[in-house]
Amino acid sequence: MKQDVVIRTVCRLVVPFIQLFALYVIIHGASSAGGGFQGGVIFASSFILIGIAFGITDARKRISEKFTVLFSATGLSIYAGIGILCIIFGGNFLGYSFLPLPLPGPEIRGLAAEAVEIGIGITVMAVMTSIFYDIAVDEEAA
Amino acid sequence: MIWEFNFALFLFLVICAIAAISVRNLLSAVVILGVYSLIMAVLWAEMQAVDVSFTEAAVGAGITTILFVAALSRTTRRSKD
Image 1: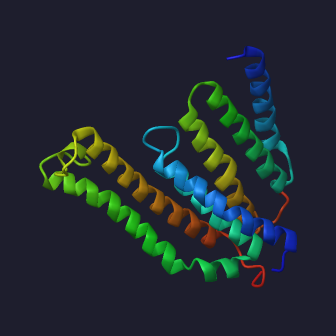
Image 2: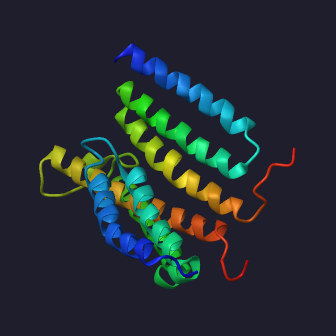
Image 3: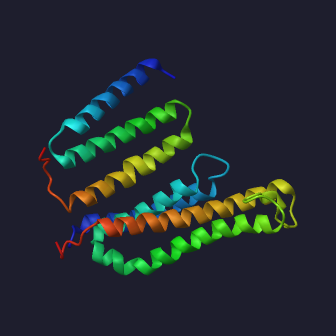
């Protein structure tokens, strides 16, 4: 699928800004509006924009299926790993204050919450991209 | 909270909901559903629920519309019922 040069150039320009905004939403999720899920969805929408502008085949070459599978597993491992680490150190699942870091309590809680949000964001980004790959049909194949 | 503004938004919301289920062209229905989500996001923000509004704008108006359009490319564009 060969799209117009304007569409391709604008998409190439706008994708980094979308991804930067998604990272901002993920990082500021605990203190203000937003969070891992919303940030992950915005990050995935940048990949979907690449898929729309350059064709699904080209997008599959840039962000492969292996990448999405790997990253969905990675984000889930971050989330579950922090939760189980809290159990190992004697708290509940995701009981952040039991983590043995050399920091005051609220800082540990904020840091662990951010790490969990990052895990959620990675998983949502990968799964949304893979759902789009599964649903969308190739222009050449159709 | 400006009640006239909210009332107009609710009116548009109901019109969009009725139009989305009664229109024959499925692509038009998807676009109207996106408009519905956008109005709903503004309404959530009006009701001080910024987090829900953010989710509605990102998921309802963004990803869902794209997935519906992608699913529409695998089927026919006109409703047959």
